[in-house]
Image (cartoon, rainbow, N blue to C red; front, side, top):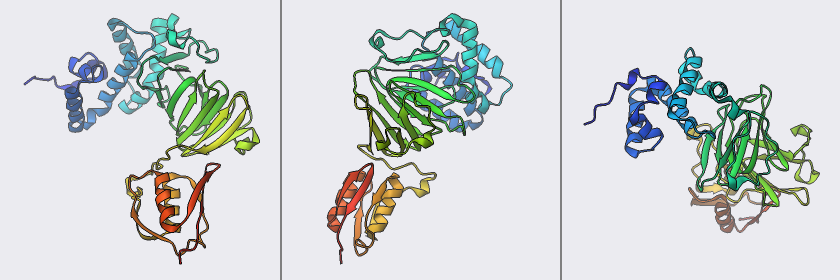
Length: 364
């Protein structure tokens, strides 16, 4: 049996030089992954230190400008020295901006110009990237997950490019995107998070959403997984409160399971539900909807679906007051649930302007 060091005495920089740790974070060996997972459970007091080292290793591996082993070592030493006085939890949140500062000191010439973009992205329609911004391009056929300076996460799709500053401004968090990405944004009160594409500006305070904006496409799509976003035309300086409806021409406000398609030729917004609505995440597992109904009034079923998916369902409660449903619809997609429900009570439904409209009859 292999004897392991006493990792309880290790600091972040010690983990980065350990071969068994690197077998997990760099080579993703399944045995190492399981071993370290068990180790964290047995030593919860050292979990933050281990995860800090993991964050550092992943960021160094995904840098737009590769570093030699010696340069990696020097950069880690600088980061650790600058954050040594902070608690581990705060170090994990703050090390990104410090890392950027250290990189400027060590390799300033590289970060004062955009990182080179791979040849297949030579036609990128990103705006002129400000000096010092980082540019990440996904030239693989797999999803690329990355973390932004504020802790927000980005899942970058193949043949997509994103640009952002090494540290966000105090009043605004702005990035630029060409392609497709899913964003999971950290809520920061009054400091908005804005994604700029060719023709659109998507602004949020904290949510999950998806943006599709490719150079070859005539339309751009923004869809919301959770929370709320405002989508306006690029260059529109009006506040999100000025956005009223898809037909106003100003833009739209989207909530969970809604999306908007922007036609660049017609400069029009079309708001609708996403193709496969998903249940909105609840604050506690105890509140999770089971979708099991036993002689449940149809109106109650619709209300439970509205709450679970965060979508508006319009129906005539008086007409359906005698209609009930007995069924287990757990794991069934929303539209299939609606089809089964409507079939059982002799009703129909249609989707109009991101709302579900049910037309039924008296079941008495």
